[in-house]
Amino acid sequence: MTQYLASRKAAVRPSPTIELALKLQQMKAEGHDIISLGQGELDFATPEHIAEAGIAAIRGGQTKYTASSGTPELKAAIAAKFERENGLSYKPSQIIAGNGAKQLVFNALMATLDAGDEVIIPAPYWVSYPDMVSLAGGTPVIAPCTAANGWKLTPETLAAALTPKTKWVLLNSPNNPTGALYSEADIAALCKVLADHHTLIMADDIYELVVHEGSFATPAAVAPELADRILTVNGVSKGYAMTGWRLGYAAGPEWLVRAMDILQSQSTSNPSAISQAATVAALTAPADFLPERNARLKARRDMVIAAIDKMPGITCATPPASFYVFPDCTGLFGARTPEGKVIESDMDVADFLLTEGRIGVVPGSAFGTPGYLRLAYALDDARLEEAMQRAIAALETLQLAVPA
Ligand SMILES: Cc1ncc(COP(=O)(O)O)c(C=O)c1O
Figure 1 (cartoon, rainbow, N blue to C red):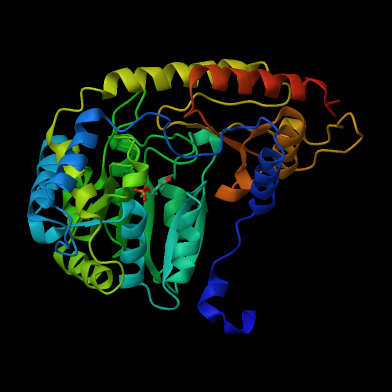
Figure 2: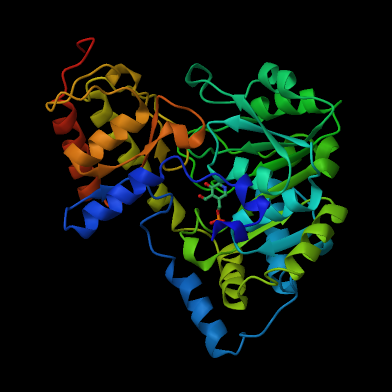
């Protein structure tokens, strides 16, 4: 019956890790105790005062449609957040709320891309970017970044990727999957390259609040002269542990935000009125729960890095932000499992860790960078420690091609 599918559907690839994900689900269903380090979501609960605001919204009857781009109260809270935390001034007409940052990235691409338009995506990238670009009819142009450069896009690589067809450059800091954090100077150097190229710039700041070392910076604040081409995307999913509430927001030039709003009004309409009310509470009250949560995350990160140091064939630098580590597993290539299978790729490493270690990790191939793994340390300390012990024990059964 696939003849019923639109050709548009072909633009979206099945995830390269689908088989691995299915195997994990199957092993779980068979009763195996699998620890998944694959989820890009914090184990923390939504802070109490935010949850209460959601409950109060339901009880108070805030259960109707709102303006498709969000309530005036929410837009005011978002504008105040940008002003207070980023030094950016936006009018309500420059702000839109949607069903997660994801929908806003999608709407922005749908509103602007024509066939042949190119979008520069630094790799490793968030898995959804290339498919969203393709779905919107554009062409993803992958700009590779290296571990040696802290996984950050360099001005030279950016300059080499730009063509007259480039319509967008997607920047994501703190980064998923690497945990890279672009400094003000890093962003200024990229913006300098972009000054003479009339591309749009998307700053995906969704991990803004999860920083362990260094300071967060955002392109619209670093290069205000480019602000009329910058869309800043953010949301409450990561910093406020609100993934399930589905509330993201974006701010940028009025013409773009209006176009995104029109698309949204003819597809999903407003994000949940209840989530909007909860987000007003999130953005207006002091985030005093954050230092303690981030300290816990940092301790977990350090524990994971220390454990990786004990893993034969795997190496990892300490990432300054987000809740991911992105270790190099190429030292395992050529290794032989006790069953005699030879490990040849990051997919094989992830499969081995699942089968033998009963832990789930995501191969770097999913993020456009084979030879690496992504581990999310967003689960409780005891389980995380157990996962690391399992990984070490499983990897020690391998016969390495080049002994560690
Ligand atoms: C880089 C990046 N951008 C955007 C999102 C989407 O976040 P939201 O839950 O707000 O849709 C994610 C979620 O994993 C992400 O990693």
